[in-house]
Amino acid sequence: MNYFNLPGIKSRREHLNISMQEMARELGYKNASTYMKYENGTYSFRAHHVPILSKKLDMSIDNLYFFNQEIAKTEI
Image (cartoon, rainbow, N blue to C red; front, side, top):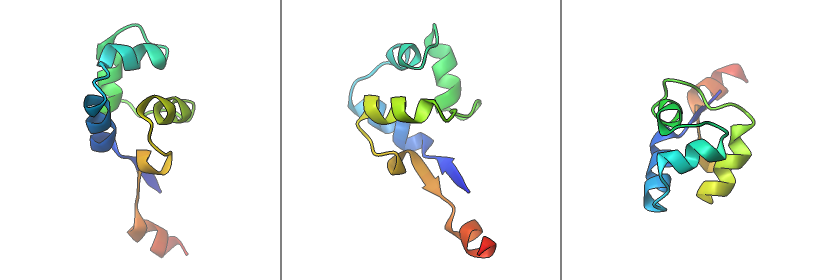
């Protein structure tokens, strides 16, 4: 199972001086408050958001996620 690296996403956005409003527009939302709910974990990013986030933040898709190694070990 994997989880979004929300602290990494936020940190990268801030490092690149990209506003939440700009990210909201990239993902198809009207306002920053909607994007903030995704970045804070209230809502979960959707599969179609992944390539948009990767491109806009210049991050590999792998870096957008935390991979839970313990769960992976128990499922093998």
